Length: 262
Length: 283
Image 1 (cartoon, helix red, strand yellow):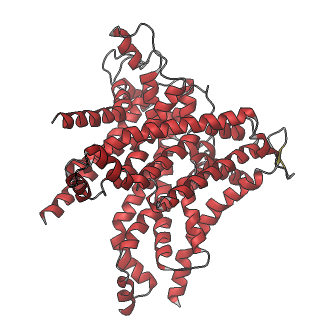
Image 2 (image 1 turned 180 degrees about the vertical axis):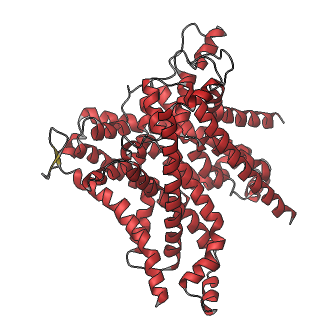
Image 3 (image 1 turned 90 degrees about the vertical axis):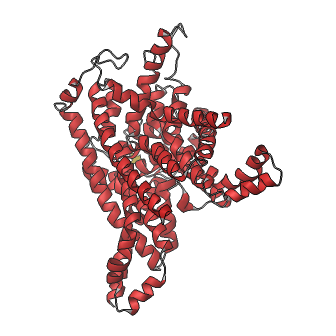
Protein backbone atom coordinates (compact mmCIF):
# COMPACT_ATOMS: atom_id res chain seq x y z
CA UNK A 1 0.00 0.00 0.00
CA UNK A 2 2.74 2.40 1.06
CA UNK A 3 4.67 1.46 -2.04
CA UNK A 4 1.72 2.35 -4.24
CA UNK A 5 1.42 5.79 -2.68
CA UNK A 6 5.13 6.45 -3.28
CA UNK A 7 4.76 5.38 -6.89
CA UNK A 8 1.81 7.72 -7.38
CA UNK A 9 3.71 10.59 -5.79
CA UNK A 10 6.55 9.99 -8.25
CA UNK A 11 4.11 10.02 -11.18
CA UNK A 12 2.52 13.25 -9.93
CA UNK A 13 5.94 14.90 -9.57
CA UNK A 14 6.83 14.06 -13.17
CA UNK A 15 3.57 15.59 -14.38
CA UNK A 16 4.22 18.65 -12.23
CA UNK A 17 7.59 19.02 -13.96
CA UNK A 18 5.97 18.64 -17.39
CA UNK A 19 3.18 21.13 -16.76
CA UNK A 20 4.88 23.71 -14.55
CA UNK A 21 6.19 26.09 -17.26
CA UNK A 22 2.91 25.88 -19.15
CA UNK A 23 0.78 26.68 -16.10
CA UNK A 24 3.05 29.62 -15.30
CA UNK A 25 2.62 31.03 -18.80
CA UNK A 26 -1.15 30.75 -18.61
CA UNK A 27 -1.35 32.31 -15.12
CA UNK A 28 0.81 35.28 -16.10
CA UNK A 29 -1.26 35.94 -19.21
CA UNK A 30 -3.94 37.27 -16.81
CA UNK A 31 -1.50 39.34 -14.76
CA UNK A 32 -1.79 43.14 -14.59
CA UNK A 33 1.99 43.56 -14.19
CA UNK A 34 4.07 43.48 -17.31
CA UNK A 35 7.01 41.85 -15.57
CA UNK A 36 5.99 38.19 -15.19
CA UNK A 37 7.43 38.12 -11.66
CA UNK A 38 4.63 38.22 -9.14
CA UNK A 39 0.93 38.03 -9.69
CA UNK A 40 -0.48 41.48 -8.99
CA UNK A 41 -4.03 41.37 -10.24
CA UNK A 42 -6.37 39.85 -12.79
CA UNK A 43 -6.77 41.42 -16.22
CA UNK A 44 -7.72 40.52 -19.76
CA UNK A 45 -5.94 43.47 -21.32
CA UNK A 46 -3.12 41.41 -22.87
CA UNK A 47 -5.71 39.51 -24.86
CA UNK A 48 -7.03 42.83 -26.16
CA UNK A 49 -3.65 44.34 -27.00
CA UNK A 50 -2.63 41.07 -28.63
CA UNK A 51 -5.07 41.76 -31.44
CA UNK A 52 -3.38 45.05 -32.21
CA UNK A 53 0.14 43.60 -32.12
CA UNK A 54 0.55 43.18 -35.84
CA UNK A 55 4.00 41.65 -36.01
CA UNK A 56 3.08 38.96 -33.47
CA UNK A 57 -0.15 38.09 -35.27
CA UNK A 58 1.65 38.06 -38.61
CA UNK A 59 4.20 35.61 -37.23
CA UNK A 60 1.36 33.47 -35.93
CA UNK A 61 -0.41 33.37 -39.29
CA UNK A 62 2.86 32.59 -41.07
CA UNK A 63 3.30 29.64 -38.71
CA UNK A 64 -0.18 28.37 -39.51
CA UNK A 65 0.25 28.82 -43.27
CA UNK A 66 3.57 26.96 -43.23
CA UNK A 67 2.18 24.18 -41.02
CA UNK A 68 -0.99 23.65 -43.06
CA UNK A 69 0.70 23.79 -46.47
CA UNK A 70 3.66 21.61 -45.53
CA UNK A 71 1.42 19.09 -43.73
CA UNK A 72 -0.89 18.81 -46.73
CA UNK A 73 1.92 18.34 -49.25
CA UNK A 74 3.99 15.99 -47.13
CA UNK A 75 0.92 13.88 -46.28
CA UNK A 76 0.05 13.44 -49.95
CA UNK A 77 3.63 12.71 -51.03
CA UNK A 78 4.27 10.56 -47.94
CA UNK A 79 1.18 8.41 -48.47
CA UNK A 80 1.87 7.83 -52.17
CA UNK A 81 5.51 7.09 -51.40
CA UNK A 82 4.73 4.61 -48.63
CA UNK A 83 2.47 2.74 -51.04
CA UNK A 84 5.06 2.81 -53.82
CA UNK A 85 7.76 1.50 -51.49
CA UNK A 86 5.51 -1.23 -50.15
CA UNK A 87 4.08 -2.36 -53.49
CA UNK A 88 6.78 -1.96 -56.11
CA UNK A 89 10.40 -2.80 -56.57
CA UNK A 90 12.63 -0.43 -58.44
CA UNK A 91 16.30 0.21 -58.96
CA UNK A 92 17.98 1.72 -55.93
CA UNK A 93 14.98 1.18 -53.66
CA UNK A 94 17.12 0.03 -50.73
CA UNK A 95 19.27 3.13 -51.02
CA UNK A 96 16.25 5.46 -51.18
CA UNK A 97 14.79 3.78 -48.07
CA UNK A 98 18.05 4.34 -46.20
CA UNK A 99 18.02 8.02 -47.19
CA UNK A 100 14.52 8.41 -45.75
CA UNK A 101 15.74 7.73 -42.21
CA UNK A 102 18.34 10.47 -42.38
CA UNK A 103 16.03 13.42 -41.56
CA UNK A 104 14.70 11.47 -38.57
CA UNK A 105 18.03 10.64 -36.98
CA UNK A 106 20.42 13.45 -37.80
CA UNK A 107 20.56 16.57 -35.64
CA UNK A 108 18.09 19.13 -36.98
CA UNK A 109 20.81 21.74 -37.22
CA UNK A 110 22.70 19.67 -39.81
CA UNK A 111 19.58 19.40 -41.95
CA UNK A 112 18.96 23.12 -41.46
CA UNK A 113 22.37 24.33 -42.57
CA UNK A 114 22.59 21.87 -45.46
CA UNK A 115 19.22 23.04 -46.81
CA UNK A 116 20.33 26.65 -46.36
CA UNK A 117 23.52 25.90 -48.31
CA UNK A 118 21.61 24.33 -51.17
CA UNK A 119 19.12 27.22 -51.35
CA UNK A 120 22.06 29.60 -51.57
CA UNK A 121 23.72 27.42 -54.22
CA UNK A 122 20.51 27.43 -56.27
CA UNK A 123 20.14 31.20 -55.64
CA UNK A 124 16.70 30.78 -54.05
CA UNK A 125 15.66 33.75 -51.92
CA UNK A 126 14.88 32.77 -48.34
CA UNK A 127 11.20 33.26 -47.59
CA UNK A 128 7.91 31.41 -47.21
CA UNK A 129 8.76 29.15 -50.15
CA UNK A 130 12.04 27.87 -48.72
CA UNK A 131 10.47 27.60 -45.27
CA UNK A 132 7.62 25.42 -46.53
CA UNK A 133 10.02 23.33 -48.62
CA UNK A 134 12.21 22.71 -45.57
CA UNK A 135 9.25 21.69 -43.43
CA UNK A 136 8.17 19.28 -46.16
CA UNK A 137 11.71 17.91 -46.21
CA UNK A 138 11.67 16.88 -42.55
CA UNK A 139 8.00 15.80 -42.38
CA UNK A 140 7.76 13.33 -45.28
CA UNK A 141 9.72 10.49 -43.62
CA UNK A 142 7.46 10.59 -40.55
CA UNK A 143 4.35 10.30 -42.74
CA UNK A 144 5.92 7.48 -44.76
CA UNK A 145 6.73 5.50 -41.62
CA UNK A 146 3.31 5.85 -40.05
CA UNK A 147 1.55 4.85 -43.29
CA UNK A 148 4.05 2.07 -43.97
CA UNK A 149 3.37 0.48 -40.57
CA UNK A 150 -0.26 -0.09 -41.62
CA UNK A 151 0.63 -1.23 -45.14
CA UNK A 152 3.02 -3.83 -43.75
CA UNK A 153 0.17 -5.33 -41.73
CA UNK A 154 -2.28 -5.50 -44.66
CA UNK A 155 -3.11 -8.89 -46.09
CA UNK A 156 -1.05 -9.25 -49.29
CA UNK A 157 -3.87 -11.29 -50.85
CA UNK A 158 -5.88 -8.08 -51.11
CA UNK A 159 -3.76 -7.00 -54.07
CA UNK A 160 -4.21 -10.28 -55.91
CA UNK A 161 -7.94 -10.40 -55.20
CA UNK A 162 -8.33 -6.88 -56.53
CA UNK A 163 -6.24 -7.66 -59.60
CA UNK A 164 -8.13 -10.90 -60.30
CA UNK A 165 -11.36 -8.95 -60.23
CA UNK A 166 -9.96 -6.73 -62.98
CA UNK A 167 -8.82 -3.63 -61.09
CA UNK A 168 -5.76 -1.75 -62.29
CA UNK A 169 -3.04 -0.26 -60.07
CA UNK A 170 -4.86 3.04 -59.57
CA UNK A 171 -8.23 1.41 -58.81
CA UNK A 172 -6.66 -0.99 -56.31
CA UNK A 173 -4.97 1.89 -54.54
CA UNK A 174 -8.02 4.14 -54.48
CA UNK A 175 -10.75 1.69 -53.58
CA UNK A 176 -9.03 -1.13 -51.72
CA UNK A 177 -5.91 0.20 -50.03
CA UNK A 178 -6.52 3.90 -49.36
CA UNK A 179 -9.59 3.44 -47.12
CA UNK A 180 -7.71 1.15 -44.75
CA UNK A 181 -4.79 3.58 -44.56
CA UNK A 182 -6.84 6.41 -43.03
CA UNK A 183 -5.61 5.88 -39.42
CA UNK A 184 -1.97 5.85 -40.56
CA UNK A 185 -2.48 8.91 -42.74
CA UNK A 186 -4.21 10.77 -39.90
CA UNK A 187 -1.48 10.06 -37.38
CA UNK A 188 1.20 10.88 -39.96
CA UNK A 189 -0.47 14.18 -40.78
CA UNK A 190 -0.87 15.04 -37.09
CA UNK A 191 2.77 14.30 -36.53
CA UNK A 192 3.81 16.45 -39.49
CA UNK A 193 1.60 19.29 -38.28
CA UNK A 194 3.02 19.22 -34.74
CA UNK A 195 6.59 18.95 -35.96
CA UNK A 196 6.03 21.95 -38.17
CA UNK A 197 4.45 24.05 -35.39
CA UNK A 198 7.22 23.09 -33.00
CA UNK A 199 10.18 23.58 -35.26
CA UNK A 200 12.73 26.19 -34.22
CA UNK A 201 16.06 24.96 -35.51
CA UNK A 202 15.37 24.33 -39.19
CA UNK A 203 13.16 27.43 -39.53
CA UNK A 204 15.93 29.50 -37.98
CA UNK A 205 18.16 28.81 -40.97
CA UNK A 206 15.64 28.62 -43.80
CA UNK A 207 13.25 31.51 -43.09
CA UNK A 208 13.81 34.90 -44.63
CA UNK A 209 13.24 38.34 -43.12
CA UNK A 210 9.73 38.41 -44.58
CA UNK A 211 8.71 35.02 -43.23
CA UNK A 212 9.08 35.26 -39.47
CA UNK A 213 7.31 32.39 -37.73
CA UNK A 214 6.00 32.52 -34.19
CA UNK A 215 8.91 30.57 -32.65
CA UNK A 216 11.44 32.81 -34.40
CA UNK A 217 9.53 35.92 -33.34
CA UNK A 218 9.44 34.77 -29.71
CA UNK A 219 13.13 33.87 -29.89
CA UNK A 220 14.03 37.42 -30.84
CA UNK A 221 11.53 38.86 -28.34
CA UNK A 222 13.07 36.93 -25.44
CA UNK A 223 16.34 38.65 -26.24
CA UNK A 224 14.94 42.13 -26.74
CA UNK A 225 12.03 42.19 -24.32
CA UNK A 226 8.94 40.08 -24.13
CA UNK A 227 5.39 41.22 -23.35
CA UNK A 228 2.55 39.23 -21.73
CA UNK A 229 0.87 39.29 -25.13
CA UNK A 230 3.07 36.31 -25.91
CA UNK A 231 1.61 34.57 -22.85
CA UNK A 232 -1.90 35.42 -24.06
CA UNK A 233 -1.23 34.04 -27.54
CA UNK A 234 0.41 30.91 -26.07
CA UNK A 235 -2.61 30.39 -23.83
CA UNK A 236 -4.98 30.56 -26.78
CA UNK A 237 -2.85 28.09 -28.74
CA UNK A 238 -2.69 25.80 -25.70
CA UNK A 239 -6.44 25.78 -25.16
CA UNK A 240 -7.07 24.97 -28.84
CA UNK A 241 -4.52 22.11 -29.00
CA UNK A 242 -5.57 20.70 -25.62
CA UNK A 243 -9.19 20.58 -26.71
CA UNK A 244 -8.39 18.83 -29.97
CA UNK A 245 -6.15 16.24 -28.32
CA UNK A 246 -8.56 15.62 -25.46
CA UNK A 247 -11.43 14.95 -27.87
CA UNK A 248 -9.17 12.67 -29.89
CA UNK A 249 -8.07 10.71 -26.80
CA UNK A 250 -11.62 10.39 -25.46
CA UNK A 251 -12.68 8.97 -28.80
CA UNK A 252 -9.77 6.53 -28.70
CA UNK A 253 -10.64 5.47 -25.16
CA UNK A 254 -14.25 4.92 -26.14
CA UNK A 255 -13.24 2.64 -29.02
CA UNK A 256 -10.90 0.80 -26.64
CA UNK A 257 -13.86 0.26 -24.33
CA UNK A 258 -15.94 -1.09 -27.21
CA UNK A 259 -13.19 -3.58 -27.99
CA UNK A 260 -13.23 -4.79 -24.40
CA UNK A 261 -17.01 -5.19 -24.48
CA UNK A 262 -16.79 -7.25 -27.64
CA UNK B 1 0.57 -0.88 -69.70
CA UNK B 2 -1.56 1.47 -67.62
CA UNK B 3 -0.20 -0.25 -64.52
CA UNK B 4 3.36 0.46 -65.58
CA UNK B 5 2.53 4.13 -65.99
CA UNK B 6 0.87 4.17 -62.55
CA UNK B 7 3.93 2.56 -61.02
CA UNK B 8 6.17 5.19 -62.60
CA UNK B 9 4.00 8.07 -61.45
CA UNK B 10 3.86 6.97 -57.84
CA UNK B 11 7.52 5.99 -57.50
CA UNK B 12 8.90 9.25 -58.89
CA UNK B 13 7.96 11.57 -55.95
CA UNK B 14 9.85 9.58 -53.32
CA UNK B 15 12.93 9.26 -55.53
CA UNK B 16 12.96 12.97 -56.37
CA UNK B 17 12.35 13.88 -52.73
CA UNK B 18 15.10 11.65 -51.35
CA UNK B 19 17.66 12.73 -53.92
CA UNK B 20 16.92 16.47 -54.01
CA UNK B 21 15.97 17.30 -50.44
CA UNK B 22 18.10 14.77 -48.55
CA UNK B 23 21.05 13.55 -50.60
CA UNK B 24 21.90 16.72 -52.52
CA UNK B 25 22.11 18.99 -49.42
CA UNK B 26 24.31 16.47 -47.61
CA UNK B 27 26.62 15.97 -50.58
CA UNK B 28 26.86 19.71 -50.97
CA UNK B 29 27.95 20.35 -47.37
CA UNK B 30 30.34 17.40 -47.67
CA UNK B 31 32.02 19.13 -50.63
CA UNK B 32 31.82 22.48 -48.85
CA UNK B 33 33.70 21.05 -45.87
CA UNK B 34 36.81 20.56 -48.05
CA UNK B 35 36.79 24.09 -49.46
CA UNK B 36 38.23 27.31 -48.11
CA UNK B 37 36.45 30.44 -46.97
CA UNK B 38 37.56 33.91 -47.97
CA UNK B 39 37.43 36.79 -45.53
CA UNK B 40 34.14 38.11 -46.93
CA UNK B 41 32.02 35.06 -46.08
CA UNK B 42 32.39 33.58 -49.55
CA UNK B 43 33.86 30.23 -50.55
CA UNK B 44 37.06 29.61 -52.52
CA UNK B 45 37.18 26.43 -54.56
CA UNK B 46 40.46 25.08 -53.22
CA UNK B 47 40.52 21.53 -51.93
CA UNK B 48 42.03 21.30 -48.46
CA UNK B 49 41.72 19.43 -45.18
CA UNK B 50 42.23 22.53 -43.06
CA UNK B 51 38.66 22.64 -41.76
CA UNK B 52 38.94 19.16 -40.32
CA UNK B 53 42.36 19.84 -38.83
CA UNK B 54 40.98 22.99 -37.22
CA UNK B 55 38.50 20.87 -35.24
CA UNK B 56 41.48 19.52 -33.28
CA UNK B 57 42.21 22.99 -31.90
CA UNK B 58 41.88 22.93 -28.12
CA UNK B 59 39.10 25.56 -28.32
CA UNK B 60 36.92 23.34 -30.50
CA UNK B 61 37.81 20.07 -28.75
CA UNK B 62 36.49 21.76 -25.63
CA UNK B 63 33.18 22.51 -27.38
CA UNK B 64 32.89 18.86 -28.46
CA UNK B 65 33.62 17.62 -24.93
CA UNK B 66 31.19 20.09 -23.32
CA UNK B 67 28.42 19.19 -25.76
CA UNK B 68 28.85 15.48 -25.21
CA UNK B 69 28.96 15.89 -21.44
CA UNK B 70 25.75 17.95 -21.42
CA UNK B 71 24.10 15.45 -23.76
CA UNK B 72 25.27 12.52 -21.63
CA UNK B 73 24.04 14.03 -18.36
CA UNK B 74 20.72 14.94 -20.02
CA UNK B 75 20.31 11.38 -21.32
CA UNK B 76 21.09 9.85 -17.92
CA UNK B 77 18.65 12.12 -16.09
CA UNK B 78 15.98 11.34 -18.69
CA UNK B 79 16.51 7.61 -18.11
CA UNK B 80 16.35 8.05 -14.33
CA UNK B 81 13.02 9.89 -14.62
CA UNK B 82 11.48 7.95 -17.50
CA UNK B 83 12.28 4.39 -16.40
CA UNK B 84 10.44 4.31 -13.07
CA UNK B 85 7.75 6.55 -14.55
CA UNK B 86 7.00 4.13 -17.41
CA UNK B 87 7.22 1.13 -15.09
CA UNK B 88 4.68 2.60 -12.66
CA UNK B 89 2.37 3.73 -15.47
CA UNK B 90 2.41 0.28 -17.05
CA UNK B 91 1.02 -1.18 -13.82
CA UNK B 92 -2.17 0.89 -14.15
CA UNK B 93 -5.37 -0.11 -15.94
CA UNK B 94 -5.21 -0.02 -19.74
CA UNK B 95 -7.63 2.89 -19.95
CA UNK B 96 -5.74 4.95 -17.39
CA UNK B 97 -2.51 4.22 -19.30
CA UNK B 98 -3.92 5.69 -22.53
CA UNK B 99 -5.00 8.83 -20.70
CA UNK B 100 -1.71 9.21 -18.81
CA UNK B 101 0.37 8.80 -21.95
CA UNK B 102 -1.75 11.41 -23.75
CA UNK B 103 -1.04 13.73 -20.82
CA UNK B 104 2.69 13.20 -21.38
CA UNK B 105 2.48 14.20 -25.03
CA UNK B 106 0.09 17.10 -24.54
CA UNK B 107 2.58 19.79 -23.37
CA UNK B 108 4.83 18.94 -26.29
CA UNK B 109 2.26 19.92 -28.85
CA UNK B 110 2.98 23.52 -28.02
CA UNK B 111 6.11 25.12 -29.29
CA UNK B 112 9.34 24.25 -27.51
CA UNK B 113 10.38 27.89 -27.51
CA UNK B 114 7.22 28.94 -25.71
CA UNK B 115 7.90 26.29 -23.07
CA UNK B 116 11.53 27.37 -22.77
CA UNK B 117 10.25 30.89 -22.16
CA UNK B 118 8.08 29.44 -19.38
CA UNK B 119 11.23 28.06 -17.76
CA UNK B 120 12.92 31.46 -17.96
CA UNK B 121 10.00 32.97 -16.05
CA UNK B 122 10.42 30.24 -13.42
CA UNK B 123 14.18 30.09 -13.11
CA UNK B 124 15.65 33.57 -13.47
CA UNK B 125 17.03 35.55 -10.50
CA UNK B 126 13.80 37.49 -9.96
CA UNK B 127 11.77 34.51 -11.23
CA UNK B 128 8.91 32.63 -9.64
CA UNK B 129 10.95 29.96 -7.84
CA UNK B 130 13.40 32.45 -6.32
CA UNK B 131 10.61 34.83 -5.31
CA UNK B 132 8.74 32.05 -3.51
CA UNK B 133 11.83 30.75 -1.76
CA UNK B 134 12.87 34.27 -0.70
CA UNK B 135 9.43 35.11 0.64
CA UNK B 136 9.33 31.88 2.63
CA UNK B 137 12.75 32.80 4.05
CA UNK B 138 14.19 29.51 2.88
CA UNK B 139 17.02 31.33 1.14
CA UNK B 140 18.60 34.73 1.76
CA UNK B 141 19.96 35.33 -1.72
CA UNK B 142 18.43 34.29 -5.03
CA UNK B 143 19.81 31.02 -6.43
CA UNK B 144 21.46 30.94 -9.85
CA UNK B 145 19.14 28.48 -11.53
CA UNK B 146 19.81 29.58 -15.10
CA UNK B 147 22.49 31.23 -17.23
CA UNK B 148 24.65 28.24 -16.29
CA UNK B 149 24.92 24.51 -16.98
CA UNK B 150 22.06 23.76 -14.60
CA UNK B 151 19.70 25.90 -16.68
CA UNK B 152 20.79 24.20 -19.90
CA UNK B 153 20.30 20.74 -18.42
CA UNK B 154 16.86 21.58 -16.99
CA UNK B 155 15.81 22.91 -20.40
CA UNK B 156 17.22 19.92 -22.30
CA UNK B 157 15.72 17.31 -19.97
CA UNK B 158 12.37 19.05 -20.15
CA UNK B 159 12.34 19.34 -23.94
CA UNK B 160 13.62 15.81 -24.63
CA UNK B 161 12.00 13.74 -21.87
CA UNK B 162 9.04 12.53 -23.99
CA UNK B 163 11.48 11.11 -26.54
CA UNK B 164 12.75 8.86 -23.76
CA UNK B 165 9.33 8.09 -22.29
CA UNK B 166 7.65 7.06 -25.56
CA UNK B 167 10.01 4.27 -26.72
CA UNK B 168 10.60 3.08 -23.15
CA UNK B 169 6.89 2.87 -22.45
CA UNK B 170 6.28 0.94 -25.64
CA UNK B 171 8.98 -1.62 -24.79
CA UNK B 172 7.97 -1.90 -21.11
CA UNK B 173 4.30 -2.38 -21.94
CA UNK B 174 5.24 -5.18 -24.33
CA UNK B 175 6.78 -7.30 -21.55
CA UNK B 176 4.71 -10.42 -21.01
CA UNK B 177 3.33 -10.27 -17.47
CA UNK B 178 3.61 -14.06 -17.21
CA UNK B 179 7.37 -13.64 -17.46
CA UNK B 180 7.37 -11.49 -14.34
CA UNK B 181 5.04 -13.89 -12.52
CA UNK B 182 7.20 -16.83 -13.56
CA UNK B 183 10.26 -15.08 -12.20
CA UNK B 184 8.52 -14.45 -8.87
CA UNK B 185 7.18 -18.01 -8.72
CA UNK B 186 10.70 -19.27 -9.19
CA UNK B 187 11.68 -17.37 -6.08
CA UNK B 188 13.30 -14.26 -7.52
CA UNK B 189 12.91 -11.11 -5.42
CA UNK B 190 11.66 -7.91 -6.98
CA UNK B 191 15.25 -6.68 -7.40
CA UNK B 192 16.30 -9.83 -9.22
CA UNK B 193 13.15 -9.75 -11.36
CA UNK B 194 13.84 -6.15 -12.26
CA UNK B 195 17.46 -6.64 -13.30
CA UNK B 196 17.15 -10.11 -14.84
CA UNK B 197 13.75 -9.93 -16.51
CA UNK B 198 12.55 -6.35 -16.98
CA UNK B 199 15.78 -4.51 -17.84
CA UNK B 200 17.03 -7.02 -20.46
CA UNK B 201 13.74 -6.87 -22.36
CA UNK B 202 13.85 -3.07 -22.54
CA UNK B 203 17.41 -2.68 -23.84
CA UNK B 204 16.37 -1.65 -27.35
CA UNK B 205 13.78 0.76 -25.98
CA UNK B 206 16.43 2.28 -23.75
CA UNK B 207 18.90 2.60 -26.60
CA UNK B 208 16.21 4.04 -28.85
CA UNK B 209 15.26 6.68 -26.28
CA UNK B 210 18.88 7.51 -25.52
CA UNK B 211 19.56 8.08 -29.20
CA UNK B 212 16.52 10.35 -29.57
CA UNK B 213 17.64 12.38 -26.54
CA UNK B 214 21.41 12.43 -27.02
CA UNK B 215 21.54 13.48 -30.68
CA UNK B 216 19.10 16.43 -30.65
CA UNK B 217 20.67 17.62 -27.40
CA UNK B 218 23.93 18.34 -29.22
CA UNK B 219 22.17 20.58 -31.73
CA UNK B 220 19.60 22.52 -29.66
CA UNK B 221 21.41 25.83 -29.73
CA UNK B 222 18.40 27.86 -28.63
CA UNK B 223 18.23 26.18 -25.22
CA UNK B 224 21.94 26.79 -24.60
CA UNK B 225 21.42 30.37 -25.81
CA UNK B 226 18.39 31.20 -23.69
CA UNK B 227 18.89 29.16 -20.51
CA UNK B 228 22.68 29.03 -20.59
CA UNK B 229 22.97 32.73 -21.26
CA UNK B 230 25.38 32.10 -24.13
CA UNK B 231 28.17 31.28 -21.69
CA UNK B 232 28.54 27.68 -22.67
CA UNK B 233 29.12 26.88 -26.33
CA UNK B 234 27.54 23.68 -27.62
CA UNK B 235 28.20 22.18 -31.05
CA UNK B 236 24.85 23.54 -32.19
CA UNK B 237 25.89 27.08 -31.24
CA UNK B 238 29.27 26.63 -32.91
CA UNK B 239 27.70 25.48 -36.19
CA UNK B 240 25.11 28.26 -36.04
CA UNK B 241 27.81 30.88 -35.50
CA UNK B 242 29.92 29.60 -38.38
CA UNK B 243 26.96 29.87 -40.73
CA UNK B 244 25.33 33.08 -39.54
CA UNK B 245 27.85 35.30 -37.75
CA UNK B 246 31.42 34.20 -38.47
CA UNK B 247 30.30 33.26 -41.98
CA UNK B 248 32.86 30.51 -42.34
CA UNK B 249 30.61 28.00 -44.08
CA UNK B 250 33.31 25.44 -44.92
CA UNK B 251 34.33 25.13 -41.26
CA UNK B 252 30.67 24.94 -40.18
CA UNK B 253 30.16 22.22 -42.80
CA UNK B 254 33.16 20.25 -41.51
CA UNK B 255 31.78 20.29 -37.94
CA UNK B 256 28.38 19.20 -39.28
CA UNK B 257 29.91 16.31 -41.22
CA UNK B 258 31.80 15.21 -38.09
CA UNK B 259 28.56 15.32 -36.12
CA UNK B 260 26.86 13.34 -38.88
CA UNK B 261 29.50 10.61 -38.73
CA UNK B 262 29.12 10.35 -34.95
CA UNK B 263 25.35 10.06 -35.41
CA UNK B 264 25.73 7.26 -37.95
CA UNK B 265 28.05 5.33 -35.62
CA UNK B 266 25.49 5.60 -32.81
CA UNK B 267 22.68 4.45 -35.11
CA UNK B 268 24.81 1.47 -36.25
CA UNK B 269 25.28 0.53 -32.59
CA UNK B 270 21.53 0.79 -32.03
CA UNK B 271 20.88 -1.55 -34.95
CA UNK B 272 23.50 -3.96 -33.59
CA UNK B 273 21.53 -4.26 -30.34
CA UNK B 274 18.53 -5.35 -32.40
CA UNK B 275 16.84 -1.98 -32.77
CA UNK B 276 14.58 -1.32 -35.75
CA UNK B 277 14.82 1.94 -37.68
CA UNK B 278 11.02 2.25 -37.86
CA UNK B 279 10.80 2.34 -34.07
CA UNK B 280 13.08 5.34 -33.67
CA UNK B 281 11.26 8.13 -31.90
CA UNK B 282 8.69 5.75 -30.49
CA UNK B 283 6.03 6.40 -33.10
